[in-house]
Image (cartoon, rainbow, N blue to C red; front, side, top):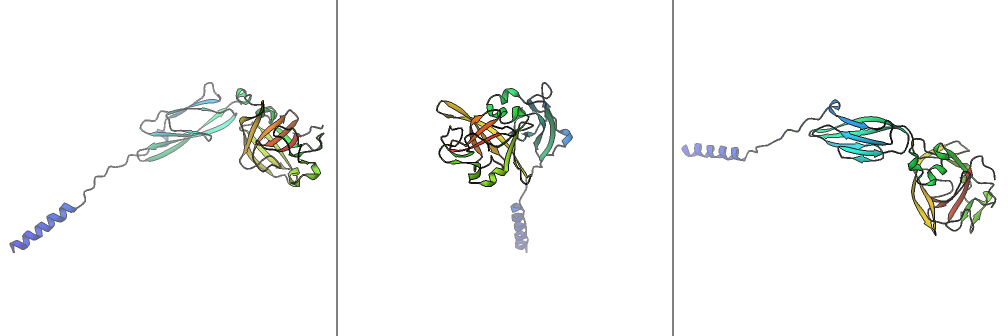
Length: 261
């Protein structure tokens, strides 16, 4: 009998020694939105340069202002366009995340930025807006085709308005401005539909000894007739525009809406 009792006690001790002992650390709390202490600083008010500053202790910061992000407690943002903006701030706490938004405004476009390349203001009527249409009355008689990468109008394979290989392309005009963004709109003048996007000015393309402005259209639309969205400009005046597919032979000729040769 003593042997049986001893055996039961031994088995009990064995099971007790094998029982898992958990060492759990409780997660921390998540801050409320009211506990988030951040600053959006513009000096002077409405400036194109914005300082984002986190004063909230014990968290990992993450800023997102739409065109960029930072995970530093203090970040400097430069926005060349006038307009109203929102920055999103996410605090990573011990127990999770909390996100708050702050609004700010930029009073005016930074002219010094847009003077860096003639394409910015030349394509947009100084920034306020300009519409470009096919140069159907161009003295050469040609509006699209091929030619040297620096040609002002087609020279090798040439097309008149009647001979354009994509006839529907003549239904389109495009508008560009710098109102709050580098806006690009492609409009079908037949049905009135509009496709909206933005454009950017890239580093110039050097051909021979000449630097030609380079633009890229983003967000869906493109300059009529072309299949691509990146171009270099061989002629840009107040009234005339010659566009090449980037570093290629395809060229099309446009003019300011309302201009007559």
